[in-house]
Length: 218
Image 1 (cartoon, rainbow, N blue to C red):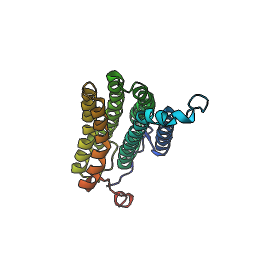
Image 2: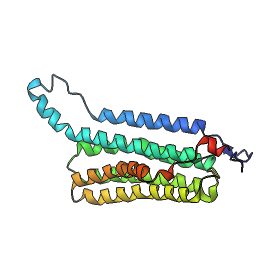
Image 3: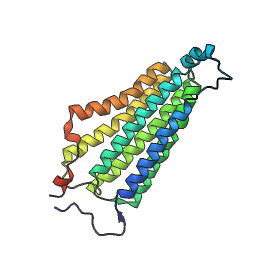
Image 4: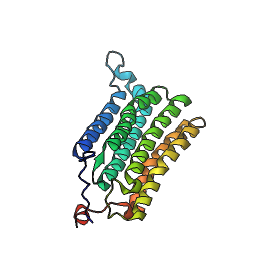
């Protein structure tokens, strides 16, 4: 069975969409580090540098956590794109929603670093991650519905496992939002469970990997 998309003006190649996504995600990751400010020696003398670094631990942790989360979202989007044969206007729009939420993530990252002991700031950060993970699930569900955009040789079991893997992160985000009103430190640990879950899934279940280009063109 051919994997080429039908010749229809509503079908588009993935190259430019992938390039746009990579560019937006790279900029979002770069903006994260701006939340970690380098002190001026006129305001923070050497005698107070240790205290300043100690007080900067939370912003640094927030940077690392968000960096890893954005990297995880990129990896999952990369996997989705690797399953596809082509794209449509609707998929482009849904991918744009995902990029909108992801590019917004540096703001709640900086907010929860500035208000490090505020439950609302952490809950808002969790809500932003919830939107990222839900929009990522949305684009996969659209692409895999009736196999309208994905490679026909991919087993249904693999499609189901991919769906299952993308359903779990929104649940983690909801759990982290709830934990933020109990313990902010616990909430941060829950967020770290998202990338751990994804990477452990690769190790424990290699069947989720898409077929290779040589297999799909056979």
